[in-house]
Picture 1: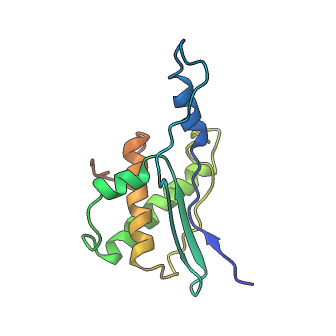
Picture 2: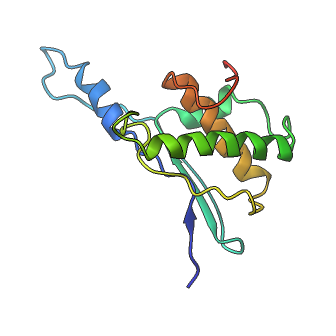
Length: 146
């Protein structure tokens, strides 16, 4: 039986629900949740035994419309940036009394000695940029504004 390393699973249903509850009007007492189609990005490779699942309202749209294209960055650049971002992310996830536990729900199992390939690194990097810009967080160094 192969083990799957869940590198990234983010559920922001609490944030989505709290945003939806603010939009209740007097004529429509029952809120209808607004969920974008295809808000889950998944990449799996059974031979390398990893899986990336990113669930966050708006990320798929942002990735398609705002992120720089694949092969814009080198693989080594993405790996270095991901290591910095994930290290800071995991530090914050381990300190829920200091950082918002609704934003940093779990740690990310990203190991620099494993070659995840370009696509995984590209998705993780772009999620980190999306996350920092969307939730007004700064994980490490300069954050591109897109």
